[in-house]
Image (cartoon, rainbow, N blue to C red; front, side, top):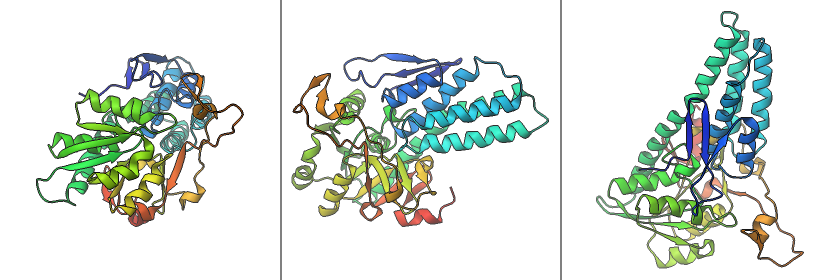
Length: 351
């Protein structure tokens, strides 16, 4: 049974506060867009797919509480709210793509003279409310495609040992997960020997969240510190690396949690296949290469403090990028809900 990080029913939206995990499982209520923005920005919810779903559902909660005099007013409010939500975490592309699509939908509905403002509101809300189920189905497909891609590299009926970074499971999506979904699928098929997860400094998403999910689902696993990756690949037989992505661009370069690039370089040296698992909503064909990706920089305090206690020398400045970019040349395959593609094949796909 997977975790339930997002609860939405009868216009009530709650999220599992990931800042409190693993010590405490507490749901917080999202009463509107402002709450949604804060939860995303403060990383109470994180993971590109989950950010998009929570952000858009927070708009639904708000729209259900208001009355609108005309369709133009509703369209303008939708556009402004979506633009604001995107600003919470600029590197994650899923919410930007969702916002663009929903803004276009609102524009088209507002121009349709055959529907009322109330019908426009209902159709717009229905489009958002379909997002969670689609995310779940896409994640399961990613898990199955990724498991097959890994297993195809090894003898029939053999078991594999995987390494993952950050958190890409139920807690990063509506449910199931992307990269962790691949590990979950391997385990369900009886083909997973062992999974290793990194601690993922400085926010410790691996130690706090991925380890929590692995233990919760009784998947054989071990936690390592980030700096142990090269030693792990030297000393253990690692069959493959599978990570998520906050943005994949046209040439196959990928932005993911800081430290991913390091793992990709080490995997290349040790001839370990390196896979990126992401839905098509994480692919941004408007950006040609990773050099153009805007990388979010986080506050110094995330590096200098732990649970409110300073652990770094007073006065030392920090460089704290939330993400790094892995070049396409280091990526074996990009796992999507439609199949697994080489990075150079993305340009020929119709999104």
